[in-house]
Image 1 (tube, rainbow, N blue to C red):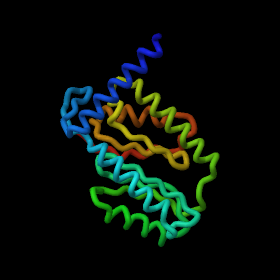
Image 2: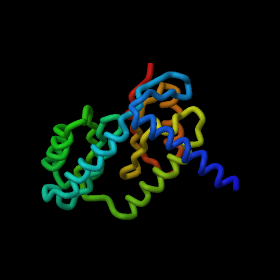
Image 3: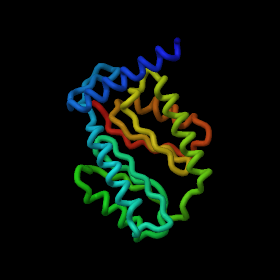
Image 4: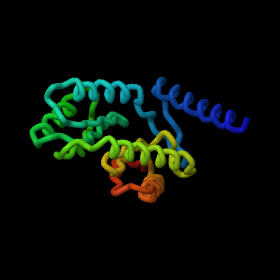
Length: 186
């Protein structure tokens, strides 16, 4: 019964967040500051369409290119075989409609193994769980991506929230490095 109640409360909170995003309204952060709701619906569309451009292209054989988008900022991670592929991947993202900023963390090297990608997924899941339970970090305000044991965090946060999220990320087992790509509230 208690588990069911928690799931219902979480679902209700997520639904409220989606409604706020769909209506393009403002959100209030835990510190009572107000920010415009991220355009997560646009972000999702940009992310899926841009990802398809890489996965459906013959220009990236033997490559893993991952696209994550938060607040119209595209994060590119993964592996490509040479610098020309890396440059081409960044140019595709740079010219994509709706993308206002790009962080290119694609490595020129052999693609990561299935076990490395599985480890990355476990790190991301563990970190998201820990962040969700952290009272000082907005649950929907931080996007977490892990590639090759490097954690990338995007979001709209204040300085204290960023420090809390970074501290938590660094404490997760298996994390080699934490890269923060936050937009800061005043």
